[in-house]
Image (tube, rainbow, N blue to C red; front, side, top):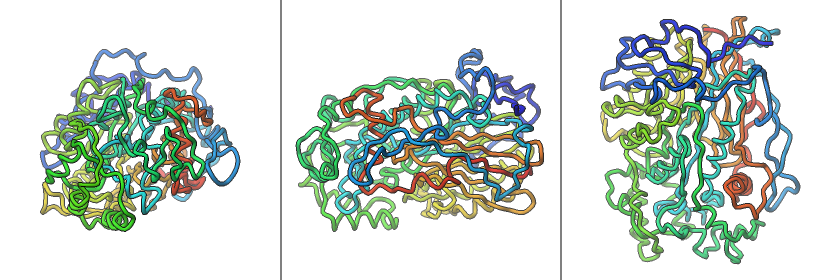
Length: 594
């Protein structure tokens, strides 16, 4: 059996924990260890990002509050994609039903270091956590949504979008059911969301996200409290009309008629909340309206978001022009979008106004995380702190385990566009953090990947500050031998990239698929010391707890979560490569010790 040093039973902490000023914190309660700003080694100026300044809301929280570890620490496959994966049952065209399929095997990747024999009997677990990414909790009735781009691109609107909350709750249920880390059996330490937690920078969506993660009752509806008022009830052939007899475009492809679907989709449901501490990283859809517009100075768009009009149809030519503008970033502040809405004012449909649909600012995003109502098992702020509010930042560090720290970056560009970058102040802070934690391993979290950090629009709050792309971040991380991994999302696709550097300064970039597009996955990541001069990072993908098979008559919370997955598989125009190759899924990633 491997020797497992559980991250939930760390012995007396050494100087690397930097917790002398804060008192002991029990890891057995699943409490994230925060690096305190009063610690001299991690003090932050206003020009830099602060580190997290708090842990759980109750110092005396019982060690039994967190999830119990297994009686015997051992690898397992049940409840993960090692055991089974949702797979189409038959056919190759039309609407296809899902069922249980064979699991994905674990692949050893040795591009950065040789895999030595006997390591399974020597290894010690250092840390284990779950990554959720791109939940995209969608207020499907929001007036600013761009469903009408489907007239030029079928994938611009997806039939499953009304069910994102039900799907996310089912994912929380899956995480809560895990016996521990699949490769080693060691108890899980925390959950990290790597951005695009919301879809449209809307306060409705932010409230739903925080309740999904921390627990509570959620009504995934806005506007009229009694009726759904979005494009799926508009008698429009462009979109799947589940309750109607209308022969819409999706029903022509085999989509079912499900009477009562829309009523069920906006019905109150309950999230148990995570049993583990969780941390939050910001994405472009959290920071920018529609994930792409730096439009906070545009009062028309802000008022439109909460108003009583919604554009539901648009010709293909105009849709193509708007889509190109978004893709090319030629109107990052939304001027082209503003003009289009004004031009089509007479064609809009009336909907119920709702002040809760207003966009939220970065400060409001941080304040919402700090709200005691959403603390759950902690930590307070979920990584964000009062120091973040003071400095106007959304990046921080936190202690993962005795020998490991986490670094959460803010890669969104406030100037607009869906691709990312970071400013000079954040880049310098990252370098300082890596240097000052040379005796700890480092795992970096962000929303954007190295390949999707190519946007250098100026930050309106810091117009003279340079913006830096993914290649510069890779170069910086590769300068430090304590960097082990960069964990991210954004692309909705599983991809694992080796970044090789000389002198044992290599690291792995781990990008995980979304939970809005099929195959709707999250990832468990485990760090182990192989006691042979190498480390291993195990990655194991998980699906939600909903059954693979669906029943169209089952409109319960669980039934809708299963349908959410099946609709996403069948969504017209959906990409079929998002699961990645076998080398991007369940893996063991070998690294030389720095």
